[in-house]
Image 1: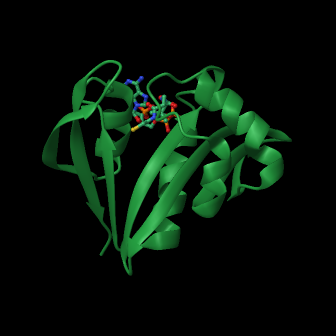
Image 2: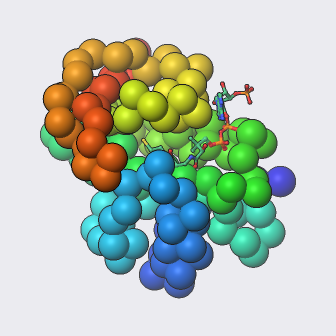
Amino acid sequence: MTAVRPGAPGDLGEIRAIQSACPEAAQWDPASYLQYDLLVATEGFRVVGFLAARTLAPGESELLNVAVAPDQRRKGIGRTLVMTLVGRTGGTIFLEVRPSNRAARSLYNSLGFEDVATRPDYYSEPPEPAIVMKFHSC
Ligand SMILES: CC(C)(COP(=O)(O)OP(=O)(O)OC[C@H]1O[C@@H](n2cnc3c(N)ncnc32)[C@H](O)[C@@H]1OP(=O)(O)O)[C@@H](O)C(=O)NCCC(=O)NCCS
């Protein structure tokens, strides 16, 4: 059974390993997540996914990264992480995603995120624009 809890310094090694295994995810220094809202999904003692977000303004936040270990996908873990963020922050959540990232866009769409803008030349390696998505909880 998947549980979600705040991330801690002791989780950074597993977060680094998951992020490294996910080329579609933003590749941040995992230690930097500790200054933001960091959630980890666990199965027993194993960290199987993480989500990082930051507050932009009261009632407004940005989802910085979410990733699930490749062998743990399509089990609802990504959805649980994003829904936990929605439940904690409320208000409006923004994110950027590659148009080619079908799995992530499907996840966000399934939760009610909507495309609101495109940022040209946003990503490098490989170059790609970003789709800005927005979720608003009533
Ligand atoms: C995107 C990601 C976090 C989804 O995690 P996940 O735990 O596999 O997702 P879930 O099992 O919660 O899926 C929820 C819904 O998202 C959609 N979805 C997830 N993966 C999908 C895929 N590969 N293809 C199509 N739809 C997908 C489906 O609608 C799915 O619901 P369903 O399984 O009932 O059909 C995961 O694929 C991942 O870590 N990708 C690499 C990192 C990344 O791209 N991060 C996003 C950066 S913006």
